[in-house]
Length: 274
Image (cartoon, rainbow, N blue to C red; front, side, top):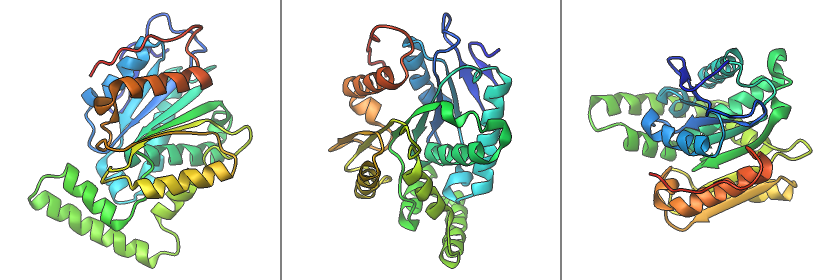
């Protein structure tokens, strides 16, 4: 069974002592370039509230260059890790994705659970999804902004820029790109009745996640009857909403989790620790 700090080279599980066997497992999927130290802050908050968690950060190329097969393989490995650690048996799941690095793995998990017999019974136990700074509409301009944000100037950035240029050309020649499929998955997520609750935390001035595109996506989902909760800050950097609005961020996260997947009876104690 998974215990505190159970890990592979790619995934880390934290199970707080005294966690109930039926307490929801929160699956943290980090943003491209995130350190485990940064993602671990969210795991510690969840542990304080009684939630076990698993976390990982997908390699940069998988998302930036639209490698659907690689994203699917990563999601499959994460599901296998959770299964092998005994973390998913009997537990509801909450998926918690940061930026497109996390959202792409959510999309892959949804595809795998639809197609793989081993996991077809798992998706109905996904009781909620949380998106921080995601999903982002993956235009070529957005990909280059991400590249310039996470890769310092030099030969490495030049090499990445050439890879992105090639990927953009392939997308232009394809009738349906990785980004098209990804955006459709994000639209359909939570569509099957009873509608899965979805929480979106984002900002109007995020240079990497176009708020107007995300606004339109959420409007479509609401029109389809999806269970959507959202907080759109006027100003907050990409994946920095917890740091910039700690009290409100934790209050909204806590209220959502208490509504859809409570860890135990009563209320949680909210402490902003950055």
